[in-house]
Image: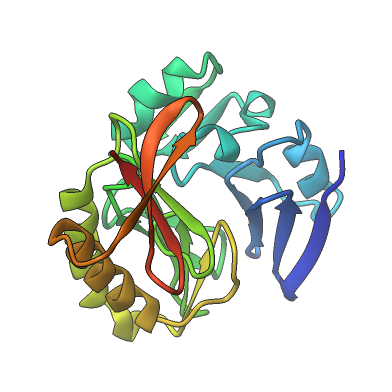
Length: 230
């Protein structure tokens, strides 16, 4: 399976797996995979080629393009609100619950969990505290497609997440999304917030489309597409 490994700095890599990416972060004692890819089935093996440290897995959420190699791990970090969606995938594993304010210490590298519900009920971001980088999963994107259609999406919760994240912008300098451009600037948060409000207010023209057999409406915000229920 084709994939690309790109080293971001001395202790961080991103693995590009088609249209999605996942990350490997190392500290002095442990390593953490953030998501496990889409098409590939050997994310852990890839990570083991980059570090000798013990590797754990964290999923930003349970959409299928983020859990491709989860079978390689007996347990993994995930927000508990994602469990129903994850179990529907049929994949095994024990969920170690994490949520807002929890921290994971890799050894001289502290990671903080930030709740970002809306795209899914338990979407989370990971703040690399000292590096001042937010690994955002799917809710923050530029020149990508943010899926907001289907029963587990919630636009109101998404807007509230963006409002809370806006208040924390002083804690990070850039954002690393799971799709499309990387890095993106922190002003993307406000742009998405305003765009979502404009969609709800009927200020953005939508284009009817079909995706995965569902009729949806695509809203072009200029810097990204937001795909919503019809």
